[in-house]
Amino acid sequence: MENKDKDTAFFSKEMPSPWVSIIPIVVLIAMVSLSITLFGSDSLGGGNQVALLVATGMCVCLSMMVYKTPWKVFETHIAETIGSASVSIVILIIIGMLSGAWMISGVVPTLIYYGVQIMSPQFFLVSTCAICAIVSLMTGSSWTTIATIGVALLGIGDALSVPAAWTAGAIISGAYFGDKISPLSDTTILAASTSGTELFTHIRYMLYTTIPSILISLIIFFAAGFWYGNGEVHITEYTQGLENTFNINLWTLIVPLFTAILIAKKVPSLITLFASSLAAGVCALILQPDILLEVAKETDGTTLNYIKGMMITFFTSTNVDTGNDTLNDLVSTGGMAGMLDTIWLILCAMCFGGSMVASKMLQSLTAVVISFIRNTFGLVASTVCTGLGMNLVTSDQYISIIISASMYKDVYKKNGYAPELLSRSTEDSATVTSVLIPWNTCGMTQATVLGVPTLTYLPYCFFNIISPIMSCLVAAIGYKIRRIKTTK
Image 1 (cartoon, rainbow, N blue to C red):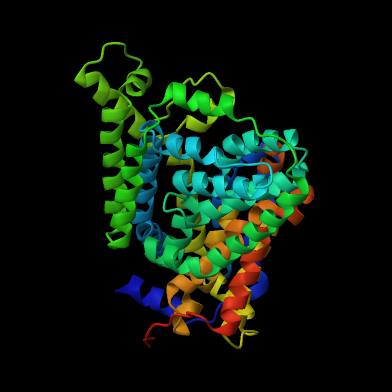
Image 2: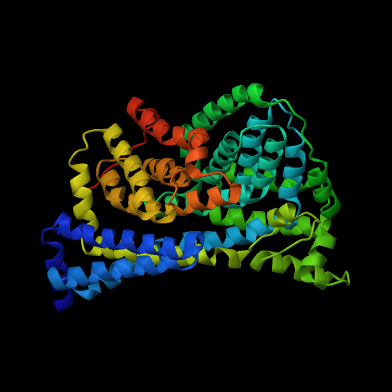
């Protein structure tokens, strides 16, 4: 009873000063900057996690020493925050399983095989954007798409005398469109879970801003293609590598069709993703037995060896030799184990977010921002600006998503807005703008992978530029702004 009284007394106190509350954020920015300097794009493998924990420690120390906050308050909030993300963490693990199964079963290779053949010189830029969108949607990873099929398309663009900046812009626009609305994407899941939105509700609601943004981008790339499309496309080596390695078969598309049906019927995301993984596993057993033996590193085609290959595909990394280094990178997968860095980052971020809420420092900073908000447009615009600002100062899209969603979650709820409006506004800013910032992990990585400086390709990443603007525009006209009943 005594501890309970202490906790109650704490929550009845005034919020900390904004000048004190911003100290953990400053520490986080400094630590993330140090991590980026030391480890570059590899900072996601541990450096940023350390930065989050150091910032968490600063938050706890300040609150306990200056405001006499009991440790029990932090312990409770951190446990509740991590607990709220537990389902999302399981979903991430299943996604690792799904991404491996879809690749080895031939689903993704079949889509790529037919996708690259629709290109013509005049339609190269628009085709590039569309192909990257499809691959990213199927894999849930803009990074993988850009580093594999994106690099190949950049080479084709060079052969067509298309400026590298235009090609890079088309690649990035498509890749981030697919990443943004894919149920396999860790950023999509993170935005949904942090804001308290069901995954597929979040994805469907994003379509109101995402579809217009990508359509405008495709129109621009379509028009630009007539100025630059004057060469020939050579894709034989690429398609032959896929055809010689996988059983390219339209029957594999039953798996994404089955998944789409489950999504349309609003089956819970965890069940949908798991069922899709199993369906892809069965598809691999039927259509890709030789690949499963290669994955299992076995030569004897027994039932147990096939099952062994399928299980390895589910839980760990796989590498299939296609005879083409670019294709080898594309068809390699990480399985469940490949999601562990992201899960580790989320756990550390949840510790930071829980501590900031428990200390009331997050509420203090939010209060400063919302004092200038007068309507729906102001709220959405503030969320978008915060997402962009966090990308600028923290240099990491995951941290930007978590901080943005955490800052405004209670504000949206208090004003009667559905949580999917928050998750959409967060994705329309924090996810897509990260690649436009030279010192952000996304910007640094893609500039290095494509060999095109960030500021050089930035003006041509139309989808990434239009998305935050479209989010504010839709809010300004009040289209499909969902509300919920508020409770005192």
